[in-house]
Image 1 (cartoon, rainbow, N blue to C red):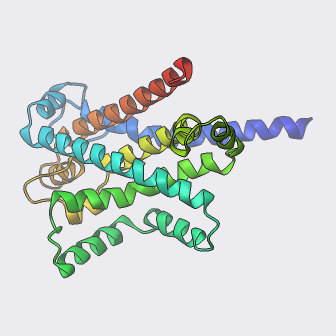
Image 2 (tube, rainbow, N blue to C red):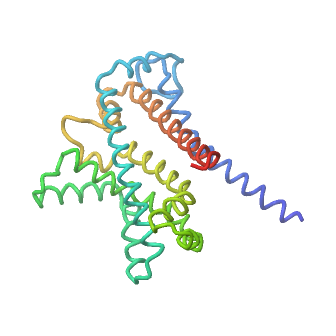
Image 3 (cartoon, one colour):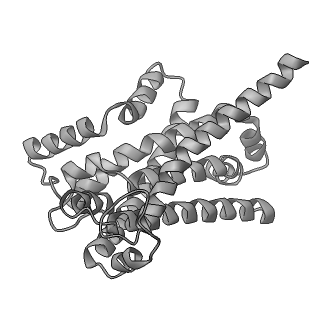
Length: 267
C-alpha cells in the first residue's frame, strides 16, 4: 500500500515541477513587460503600464502583431486540412510506405528550425520559383512546420477508432462523405481542435524559419521583438510578449468552449 501511494505522489511532484518550469518564463515576461524602468531588466524596478502603452502606440509592433496573426491563421487552416487528410490516410492505408510517409510528415519536428529555414530559402533561390522572401513562401514554411502537430494529434485519435460506426452509417443509407462527416469527423473533432491550437501557437511564435523566409517590408512579431532586443533592449518587446501570451490563452479557451458547445448541442 505504501508503494502504491508513493507512486501518485511522485507523479504529482513531477507534474508540479514541470508546470513550474513552464510558467516561470511566462511570469518573468509579464513582470518585465510591466517594468517601470527604461531597460529590460528582471526583477523590475517597479510596476508601470508605460511599455504596454508604448506597444499599443507602436506602428512597428502592432503591424508585426497583425502580420503574425494573419500568417498563423492562414497556415493553421491549411495545416489542419492537410494534416487531417494525411492522418486519415496514414491510419487506414495498408501500404508498406505508410510508415515511411509517417516519418516524412514528422520530420520537421525533428529537424532544427534553422536547418529547415535555410533549406527552404536555398530551395526557393536555386529553383527560381519566385518564393524567396515572399508571403506565399513564408506561409509554405509555416505549414511545413505546423502540419506535423495536426498529423500527430489526429492520428492518435484515429488509432483506436472503431470503423464499424462508419459501416453502420453506410448500412443505413449514408454516403461515404456523409458517414465521415457525421460520424468520424464528430468523434475526432476534439483531436482536430487540439492540433489546430498547437499549429496556431507554433506558427505565431515561429522564429527560425521566419528569419530566413520573411519579407523585407513585413515583419512578424518574433522578428520585431528580436530586432528591438538587439538594438534597443527596451521592455516594449516584453510587453509584446504579454499580448502574445494573451492571444494564445484566448485561442485555447475559445477553442475548448466551442468544442464543449458542439458536444452539448450535438453540432
